[in-house]
Length: 390
Image 1 (cartoon, one colour):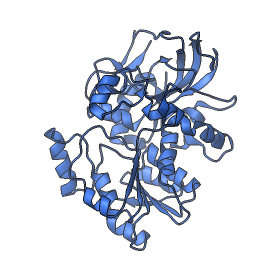
Image 2: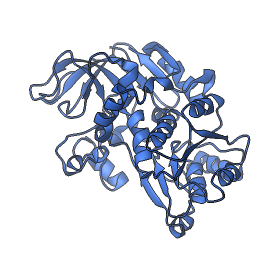
Image 3: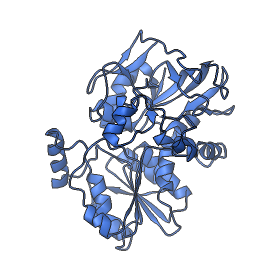
Image 4: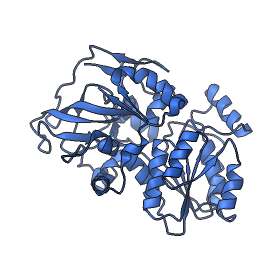
């Protein structure tokens, strides 16, 4: 089969003659991929910021398709079903899964011992996302083996297009969870840093949850335009002071809720802060750039909430934790508990409350994937979200 594989920093290739996956466990299924996507989290692998990648690893964790084969113990699916596959691999039986904390499933990370050493305790296995999270083959391919297929996959109702439901596997529930973690009240201002795909869904989720106003912070005109179309007030950090504009919009109080939809590769306007992080990162003295976290801690209203769906992979520096403590801020963060939200979000799509396809700007063949990684990373050609068609 064909698949996009990681061969090193900035080296993604569409390889032919990659071995087809096969049933390895009675609970497995084999999916023929009809649509997959490049996620902002994939860029952390592309740029070499996440440890644990190996030469030839298959990329991608946003995918859906048709069930071609099921293991003998997989009773949920049948051949011919169309399914969206959440990026978190869940067993459905451990203590964390029973609590709905699916992204920290205790059983599915095949490299649990390594994850225990790095994180203190294991996280769930993830598709196409380093050997720290199990080393599972990803979904930017013609076929994928889906472990625990009797638990995770979401069966797609008849009549729905791939574009409507593909993002149920990651970025739609990620944006929704980001807003849900904020415990939004009718008088709240919610500020969202980053207007990429997750930020776009966080904006619309916060509005659906009843926020008084939502503010989007970015510097890419196409992203800011899309955010305004979704109901947000926008701040271009290249053109105006984020701090001063937030003061103005909140009558000096600061936003009650702040969402970091950026993560480890945060950019800032030309500042000492930005130069410091880039220098430390280049010297391998810091793995992630936490500019957004610093800014959120500073501007958030006392007793507010910081919600962090943006991915961080290692160590950060110069975090004003004293300010966070003395202001009584609450941090809520983590990979998305996708299956906690999918039933509700699928119904919202069916009812017309949201059509997730608005975020797609590019739809191309799998062979064009390697060049689209660079286009997406550099935000060229108005690129906000890329869908690949194997």
